[in-house]
Amino acid sequence: MKRIFTFVLLLVIASSLSAQDSNTEIAGVKAACLDYINTFYEADTTLAYRSVHKSVRKTGFYFKDDESIYSEQLEMPFDKLVGLAKRWNASGNRTDENSPKEVKVFEVSDKTASAKVTAVWGIDYLSLMKENGKWMIVNVLWQSPPKFSVSQTK
Image 1 (cartoon, rainbow, N blue to C red):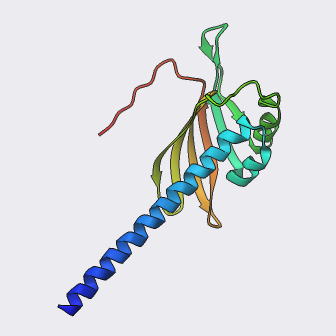
Image 2: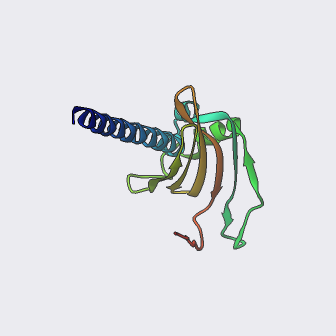
Image 3: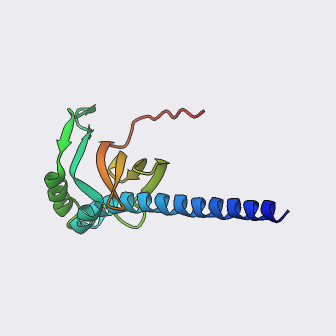
């Protein structure tokens, strides 16, 4: 009986530690995603250096209202991302306390994660990797606010 109790106790402790680890990892991914949004919202490039990998591949499409079409695919390496962050909201008039700042984490594994952020400029799908114990964004696929969206769930 003592062995069964010890075994059950060890299982409970292991499950509890695993849940704590999962919550910590999810929080780390969310923090990196919020850094990404706030890099632009606050024009604070230190956040990009903290959470966006220097090898990032950012690609996407903005909607041209005057032509009612999307742009061609646009590429933005890390240095251009930092340059845009410095000027995009430097005056502080593009965002306010009501601007969207949503993070949805899809999956977190031990070395990789995926998430979606919704911000004033539209949506971004992010791929992250864990490097030296820290979550870093390595891929960004973005677009202006969608004209339509379809979500498929199982």
